[in-house]
Image (cartoon, rainbow, N blue to C red):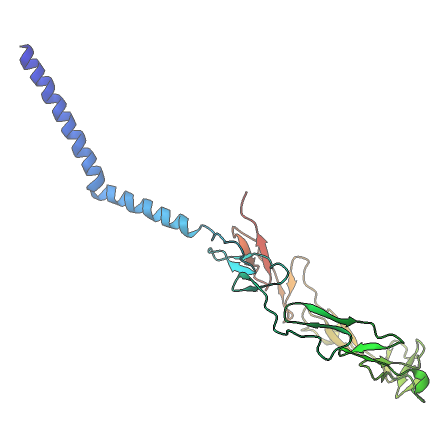
Length: 258
């Protein structure tokens, strides 16, 4: 009797083990189990595609972050150039930048090199790397109020007109009473138009004539005026990360969520 009972218990254990083994095998080979595996792999791939690119040492300038945004990695140290997002040592292209120069400075292709500085003395000025002595009003006859070249790359004005005068052909001329208009550079009256004459004017300054301009249709405080005179409402980050376009020709920096 005891032997028969032990045999029955052994048979029950073996049957339970076989059922468990069949169930485990089905979980790893049947359609539902395979679908579960594919779904898990897809989730891993999707998560990896959204991971921002890790930048290596030495990278510089605007660089794609691998997720559709732009990372600004900054500039390089002095004496380096940013080439293809990598800081490299700058190689001078002009080994003797001060050749033929006695003052000022010049570039060797990487940095400015002093060629003597502004040390011309006696009222001289540095012009193109050489010292030059400019002319003075005392040496010019009938210079008038028109600016004239000083011989060293600059200009001098020997006669200054009053606030209500205009310099016309070298002579100071008194402006007339324009009664609401403005006195132009020819000492004649000019009457600018108003915004009413420009019903389709945009948000950019509108020239009204006589040197006057005015914004006739300004944008709202939350808008940006585009170069074509239209107002644009910029978009925010709205779930975006990195340096992104705000829809109005500008970029904004969207920090990652905390």
